[in-house]
Image (tube, rainbow, N blue to C red):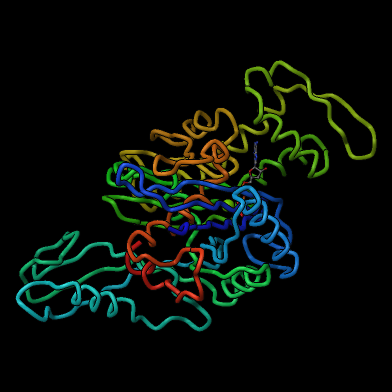
Length: 408
Ligand SMILES: Nc1ncnc2c1ncn2[C@@H]1O[C@H](COP(=O)(O)OP(=O)(O)OP(=O)(O)O)[C@@H](O)[C@H]1O
Ligand SMILES: [Mg+2]
């Protein structure tokens, strides 16, 4: 039998990552066996929007080819993540009369279509529509209405739209790199898919995917997405703090920041750090001072995130499973402790979950959560429909966006 391959592509503003996985069944459970991963510094993308098509395409090609080389296979299509402040979310209600005695899947489809049929603003495209709950006759809070007796079916959808031109440029960059876009998924949704358990989503949890220039937030409650948001700041504000506080150039500030993350904070605070000021001159600074700059900035970011969460989940303490921090910044040692000082909920660092196998050790860096989640979403879709994957004989597959819009 030919292999079924799913590829996630996360074009971040700092790094572009690709994960190629094979859809397999282990002990009758679908699992994504990771065969290849790629990671390359991004060029041609700013704040998660393509600013130079040629450069972005080259970056994408490099990341995917690295993963292909590791896997010893070629792929033809990807699930690509999008983020950025062009994304917007709204809620919309739809009502239909139930056709028969009981609610049929066709009625559910129809009520979704009605709720989705809000006139989109010019130049905007619908990315996702998440059912929030259903009302069958007078019974509210229904999770799955199929089979229930009733005459009237109502639903509320959480709709996410993006700027058509911005999304179009992501697709163009992927195509110019020589691949096809199977579907576009919001990055915080993909990260959540990779790092959260179903129990956490049921109890209430916020995924905080902190990258270089953006922080994606996804709040799950009672098993469904309740809130999505992309904040226009991330780990680079820590770098900026070091540039200011230590008077060093960007590259040196980032090197120092990431070097700190590589060791334990307790050791770092006892040592002195040699700085390269960019003009050949060097000087030394106490590790403790650097650690303090990093921590204060991170605390400030988490305070802002905490306030944001209080606004949308009022209050944050209702999130039974707390906050899961992931993305590149999450490798900073002690980040859970720092975040815990700013937010009064349980905090954990999210790395990829249990329904994957293969080269799992290559995915230990939480920066891989989004790319892995994209491949997992592809695997979910394949499990459901038997399509959307790269297979040995795969020709041109239909675009399958509709499924994700409806169900994921
Ligand atoms: N070892 C490390 N220690 C501390 N920070 C790190 C480390 N490795 C990466 N980072 C930081 O993580 C950020 C990049 O994270 P990530 O790779 O998730 O970003 P991205 O997805 O490219 O960005 P975005 O999601 O904003 O588009 C940068 O600010 C980088 O400096
Ligand atoms: Mg990212």
